[in-house]
Image (tube, rainbow, N blue to C red; front, side, top):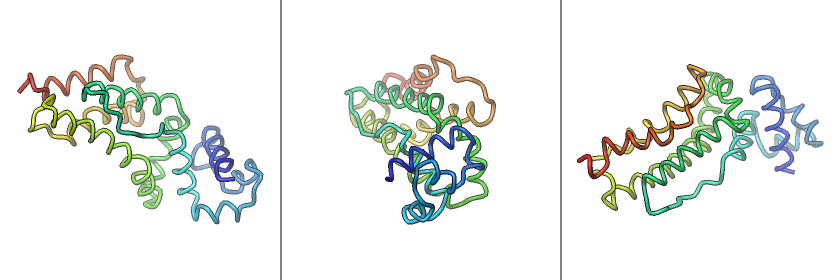
Length: 182
């Protein structure tokens, strides 16, 4: 039942956006009662964030043996999520609602942002430990350098993300923090 409810939520989000999603409509589409949803998720915002989590690839700390390769793969994965899933399509409206709904904002950060940051952070830390990146590498700066412009394009400018973005961003990080740059 949970998967049916989450799938109905994703479909509805894709069609109408966060603001127009109602628990009643999710229940109707999923063929369940509203109380069945509220027993699992106490608020619409929690339901929506968990539905969005289903759109993320299961995260794992894949160690390809190359921190650059790992960061390239993670950046490409984020681009894919932001451009090819319902999460990317509804994120602008969701972010607007997060400004007014601290529960939604906290859920989004805890269930989507923080778990993904852990994978990125692990890739950078492996690169530092193996000597691929300088010991002075600012891990947070690297994460913001790789992911920040993607959110800027999606949420602010509306410009498409260039096909070569992931490679260029990782190359930029390596130009600054790569062992050879030091």
